[in-house]
Image (tube, rainbow, N blue to C red; front, side):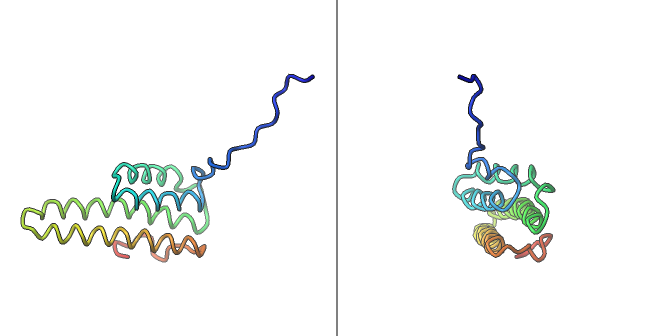
Length: 125
């Protein structure tokens, strides 16, 4: 009998942490869940920063898009909160949520087609 342990194979669930399409998809889902559970958006931005520059190809544009979506969305949300004192902020907060959801859906659709984001540095959609 041999005392060597059997070779271990990496778990399939670990792939979502590695840079690539699956990781980007997980980040989009974390962002969308972040609208309800705030902490998941923070986990998503950390994953995006950790894996940016490692994936290569068309996936890199998605990481840029995701990072900008987070920070621009946060900026828009903060401006909306300040403007809630004059009640227009409530309307703007709704618009920010719609903008955020649309950017995530556009990204998910492009990822599903295997395409890069056309202008990942955009402030709009």
